[in-house]
Amino acid sequence: MGTTLSIQTPSDFDLARDVCSYGYFLLAPNHWLVDSQTFARVLEFDAGPAAVKINQQPTGALRARFDRTLDRSEQSEARAQIARMFSLDTHADEIVAFHTLDPRWKKSGRARLFRSPDVFEDIIKTVTSCNVTWPSTINMNRRLCEVCGRQSASGVRGFPSAKKLARTRVGTLRGRCRVGYRDQRIVDLAKLYHKGEIDPVWLEDPGTHDDDVFKFLVSLPGIGPYAAGNIMQLLGRYSRLALDTESLRHAKSVLAMTGTDSAIMKKLAKHYEPFGAHKFRSYWFELWDFYESKQGPAHTWDRETVGTAFTASNF
DNA sequence: GGTAGACCTGGACGC
DNA sequence: GCGTCCAGGTCTACC
Image (cartoon, rainbow, N blue to C red):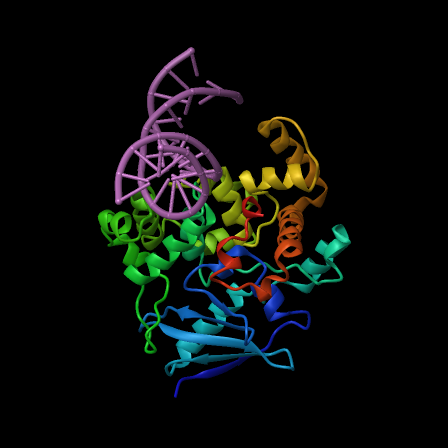
């Protein structure tokens, strides 16, 4: 019999809406169970991994059931990891400010974006999303968990820690996880993170300026302007866009922008400028709205079918 | 500062 | 079943 935790949430929190708000909810070890509207994955602790299933009670509180007993410090750590994934600590004032600036999302309540339990997983997931189509990103994350992740008591595997990946051979990452030329970059990022040279506290500190964070991120191996912008939104910093080919498709098909790709990129930057500190959210929910208009609400997406092909290039 | 080409994987396609 | 082409962001060399 494992530990069950009850976690209070802000009154506007909606598990189905707020988990299924960013593509990473479809990447291993995350698993959204459509039938039961339950979120499942393995969380990492110093003493070993634990699988958890989380659903929302009618009161709004979350019930998190683990496959083993957690001690007090692990319970505290679990609460912190869950709060980060679901952005439970997003301040109400910040959401009001976003909806005031961009009222399109006030009715649905969209404001939170799903992310990983820690910064390291978000960085690696972003690297696996660069220069590949979405199905390859899904495969890389699945294999990273299968090959390098630790197994929980119930037999499911978690995302490998920085410590583990720092000690993994590049040949293993390339040969068995199929990450291609990202192998050395992933090991280098893991070493930097494990040594504390990538400091999640500094990156998440509201006192650290966005410009300094961006400058630091693009100095890291495998991180360019797109990846840095994406990692910034995963840090809760929405002042920058993460523009890629998906953005170009959105600009052409939804926003009716024309011109060369570089001209469209400049138009996009100008288009979202009025949303200031919230521009990534405005951009992303526009994109997400388009996906849902084609495939239905994200909380109904089957991981094996819609989940493998939800980018606009496949519509 | 801008640009061309290499880096890999996996899917689509033609034969 | 095999070979070719293509999509995708970062990095390096070069102008």
